[in-house]
Image (cartoon, rainbow, N blue to C red; front, side, top):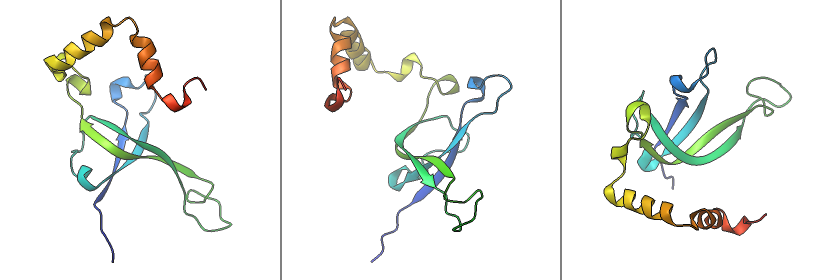
Amino acid sequence: KSTYVDIQKLKIQELPEQVPTGEMPRHIVVTLDRHLVGRIMPGAVISASGIYTIQAGAGKPGKLGANSGAVRQPYLRVVGISEATGVGGRMTDTDFTAEEEGKFNQMASDPDFFAKMQRSIAPSIFGH
């Protein structure tokens, strides 16, 4: 028995104003599936999180070229996506609730905040 899942591939690129003068914007292919499909419209500024993966090219054995196994294509399998808010996709003061701002201020006033944050990031590999 087969199960079909909605999949959508997007090609996203850097914002033009963030690209150094004279350079082309970089891009990457992202893959959305299930409930994430169809949430983003073309031209939208987004914030995406996911699993960065390298996909091997599928070429003919013994042939070198754009689709040979030696060519790797990076892509992002998206697990969370949202349309960025604010001017040019940047966050503004109105993007946080009063409750969130209170929590941020409380964390900022804690003298051990840096140490707590340091311990909470990858605790299984902390120190090495």
